[in-house]
View 1 (cartoon, rainbow, N blue to C red):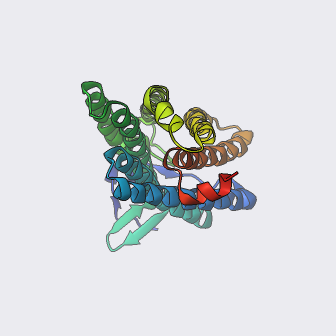
View 2 (cartoon, rainbow, N blue to C red):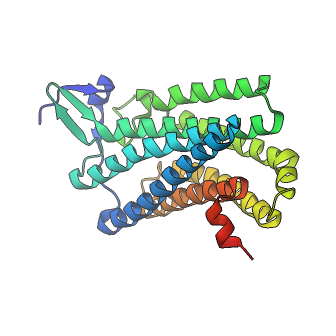
Length: 280
């Protein structure tokens, strides 16, 4: 098949595709987990935005932007994974006139960008809630987040492709930045929980359950960061068992993140339906 100019990065034309590694059952498993994950991320993201509109607290807006960003870009990424299964070509090439879009590598770049946006916005949520302002250290984290977005989007990550021999591969750098941004976010969230959030929730109805749910959400956020690191490590292993392990880790990663934001949402916002569920 003749290829036109490759979008978004012409240099990707030099890369080779991979075949789908998970099989039929793996595809069904990851699709079911992915659909549940996306439904939760969209629902919680929209719910946080509604809470912001009702309260006008800007830190809640930051959280909603982070969740809606990752929900949107991961929706595109999930579509790419489905096409990968059906086409058995990790590039998922889509020809439009003289242009060939490598859809899955492009969608993965956007998904990585969405993850960095999410981490940065959740960090700002915790930082602004704790300090009521954006401090100098917060500006540094924002700058690090913006830098990470560009690193995650650059063509030399070669997402889901086999790079040409001798090519630069920045995936290790991108993975390191994901780890750094994730832990910075988690540390700020834990600090905010101890300094302000814990005090605020103690003064509200159902304080005990709300504190527990929020803490569980933070623990799951930390677990998701470890799983992201493990995911990146497993992706470099070519042994036959690694594909199965990677599939399980991917599912656990999606579950931990979706449950994390759900518990944090219930604990901090306490929607009306939570009142009915936990009413004594």
